[in-house]
Amino acid sequence: MNGGPLYLVLIYLHPGQTEALRRYENLALRVFHRHRGQFERILKPARVAGGQPDPEAPPDEIHLLRFETPEGLDAVRRDPEMVALVPLREQIVRKALLLRVDDVPLEGYFNRG
Image (cartoon, rainbow, N blue to C red; front, side, top):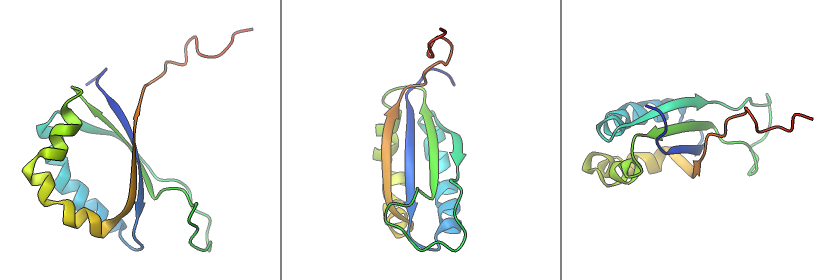
């Protein structure tokens, strides 16, 4: 799948919800596939050991999602199976920021002077 809409999702979890997030993602994955979406990457920011919770801390995870069509994300959000998962997601995810992003080729991006 290339060229479809690309989204970056910053996910902030309620404390102790990492394993619950894995279970939720496994349930949500079939809905994403149904609407021709996929997880392209899941990134975990490095943590400082022993640090206190910080309201400006990095997200717990960063997901890179892609859909074949611009309608894919809306279709996932409206899917009855995904709607049924909303209460579970709210127990797990404290905050999520979704950004539509463009994949910018590095070739020609930087000044070659």
